[in-house]
Image (cartoon, rainbow, N blue to C red; front, side, top):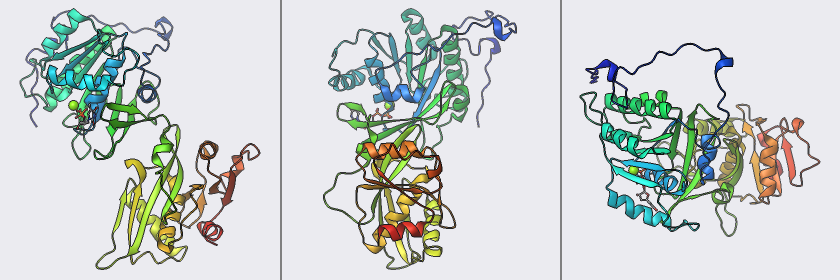
Length: 431
Ligand code: TYD
Ligand code: MG
């Protein structure tokens, strides 16, 4: 690994390029420190506000990572254009001014309030940090967007743009700028296929907030996930749909995660999950069919392979279904990846529905974890799941009987059915 150390230690991180200005900080008591309160810049994008924990924090450094082509530039451009009152500087090392102009025209079609009003949006095609800071000093922007951190380079060290040393150096200079001027900075970072932020794992430690933009490039839905946040919770997600005119906020995700279909198919069930703080009803499709040759296949999309194997073993051993000779394919709708164990019950029902070719009524949903003994385990925030199911017009929800203790069933209109074992659910459902 090349690791080039700066020739001039003092000037290393100085975004103003002047040395010798360093002042020594004295320790203070907590009482001496002024409370800055909660000042946040609320953007017109509710999904972004949510993942940031309520809006952009002044002086914060936010990294937005994702695979090439997922829509990072689109999202950043869209936010820059939507913040009409703030002076935004968008620094691009990847695309030309013309390309960005063309893209902004497409995106602006959605902007009904004041289309074409981009007076406060400034664009700079530049990769040298020194020139970027010169532009910043004369413009004094309220928000800086760097697209991408891998294309920037600093003259302070001798290595190529995108190398670990450069990425760290450039991010360090930008961090210093952000903290000294209280200006928020967004950094776009590319992630390689194996999920590492290319080169800069180091970046994740330096920045205040890390947002991951993910989703299947061939599907329209995109998830913006917080993986680190010094100013809020890390369990939030934002959902977008990629249209020809940019990204659309999806404020009612359950509707898109349940496919509209005519008639009832076997192998399709709905699970009441929670992603971040939001309840989401997600459709699961399973296909179980006899393996024609060789080792049976187990192919989950949007679900953990090991957990699928575990659930199949439970169905075989505790419930007596012959899964060992079957190919099993599982699909979570919308390209979403589900980690919530409350999906277990819906998944098991979906597998058996496909195996036995008995459709499950589409007004029924499920929320329980399945244990190794085939028992239904309680899941957190069951009341939120139940009320979301009720809101979306479901008539029945199956849960663990151990969840029920904490529940006030008088207020709910949906029928809540609670059981202790997987086999009891099968008997009730497929009787
Ligand atoms: P982009 O934002 O350039 O991705 P990234 O910066 O993460 O590499 O855009 C990704 C894809 O989105 C690109 O293939 C084109 C598509 N796209 C749309 O479908 N609609 C749009 O309005 C825009 C701007 C892009
Ligand atoms: Mg881009």
